[in-house]
Every structure is written in C-alpha cells, then in structure tokens.
Image (cartoon, rainbow, N blue to C red):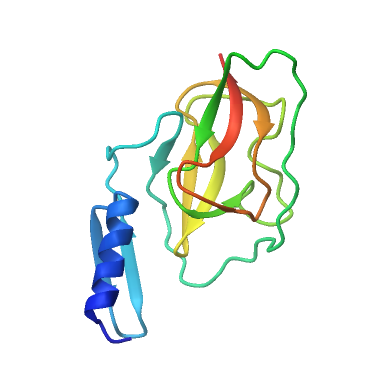
Length: 157
C-alpha cells in the first residue's frame, strides 16, 4: 500500500471521529495500530477499556445478524441507554457458541463486560459504568453498529 495524501487524510479523519490518540503504521505486510488512551472523552453510559490482545485475522464470529432481544415492561420512563462508542461489529459473546455476556432481564455490576465491538480487527470490550438490569438488547449479534447507536436500554440500580 502506498501512503497517499488521501490515505493519510482518511486515517486522520478516522482518528478524529473515533477520538483516537495514536497511530502506528508498518508497511511490511501492512500493519496498522490505532489506540485511544484511557481517560479520553467517552459518551455517558459506557466505558472503554483498551483491548488486551490485538488480532490480525478475522475471528470466527457469526456473520449473519441475529434478531435483537426485548423484554416487555410498561414503565420505561426510567430506562437509560448504553450507546456504542465507535463504529464496528457488535458481538454479545467472546466466541461463537459461548453464552452472551448479558441478556434481557439480567442484572449486571459496575465493570462487567456487556459486549464486544470489533473495529479494525481490534476487539473492544464495552463495560458497565454502573450496576443495573438489561431491559432491552437493541442490536443483534454480528450487526454493524454506528457511533452513538443504542446498544442496550437498562434500569440503573
């Protein structure tokens, strides 16, 4: 890959949009590493934790979206939304066949992993900033999500 002005501008746009703080590029077999420092501005309701490992090959996740789950509750006035901090692919579990981190009606604690969003081959764990209960799962497993898209509706404990 040749580094053109357009490529550099596209990378700069991605870094700006995703609030990334560093970029490493190694053109030997094209290796790109983008990072966001912990403590960067984050949308409320989620927290971002740097991934522990970087994957260079696609992980064997389900590729077809699965329907989102909903629990029916009449009073949704006190629900809060947990939104995606980035563009990527939403996964409910760490691997196909493993149980989802959280499901409708399930209670979770502060710091619990809620899901993974894969962005540019990086697996980003989305963790809870406060304890609560999942009232609605708004996206399906394997679905592409946008920045700011609602992932879960919860009732905060």
